Amino acid sequence: MDKINPKNALYIKLGRGGEYEKECLTSPGKVHVGWEDIDHVLCLAGDWEAVRRMNLGIYKAKQTATNQANQLRTFYESGEDVLWITFFQGHLYWCFASTEVLIQDDGSRIRPTVQGWHKSDIQGKPLDASRLSGSLLVLQSFRGTITKVKEFEYLVRKINCENLPIEQKAIDARETLIQSLVAIIQDLHWKEFELLTDLIFRQAGWQRMGVLGKTQKDIDLDLLSPIDQERYKVQVKSAAGNSEFQSFLSLAADAQEFSRYYFVVHQPSKNLLRDVDNIKGEDRQLVKVWLPEDIARLAVNYGLVDWLIGKAK
Figure 1 (cartoon, rainbow, N blue to C red):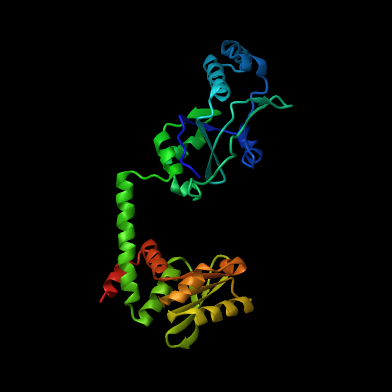
Figure 2: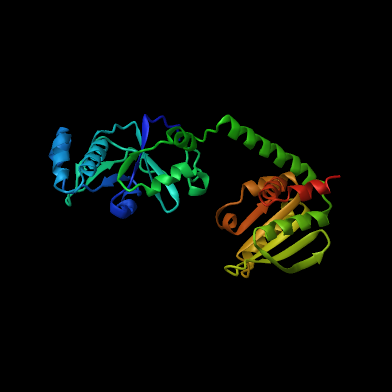
């Protein structure tokens, strides 16, 4: 997907209490609002003073009548270069809308989207609330229908996957740290590698039920989720290639008692790396492979950096 370059951005609430959200956020998508009691012809003609006077008969306060007229005008007159956003089920959705305004049988109005609503950035990463600034999320508490997005530049950067220099500096430093940990991980004794794998799962909340196989260097861990009681089988390999991985895939396909199978490798061979890239279909859902770089990232995520540094030789 190409980068977006909007003129400005507007937050919109899709109906009273979000009543139009589900129908709007499906392909091909539309922007749907109410204002059923306002004359559509007056809006198309741009007679906003007449619209404001109509609102005076609906709302008690003059300021409210004026605000509602201004929001409706924004809905009708915003161009296709305006970015529209809303929030639904913990995600930010965005779209561009056609300038055509259509009235529905119930008097509500819609603008068709240009290419549907999106809930991911241009690289396909979901725009969930955990990735967004609180100053943008506060829009969810807006009590009107349409308002300008003050965090416009931040919003566009998020969608376009662009970082400020200070953000990029931190990202680069984190990546350097991860790569430096890979070398430490590959230099671990196999027992330390097994312990590191166990620590990662424990930090993630999993409980170790026991060691299924005690054959030196090839350790099978039996892990339990205390919340949903799901069980994972984890095979920790000091070194592995094509034959070991194919045997593991066969084991995962035949067994039924585990929800997922993890293949964690200390020293992967080149043919194993090729096989991992070619995992398809059900195997990709059932089997997860952790290579040294994956483990390094998880070690950073779960606060095990100091532990690893202490093991460096």
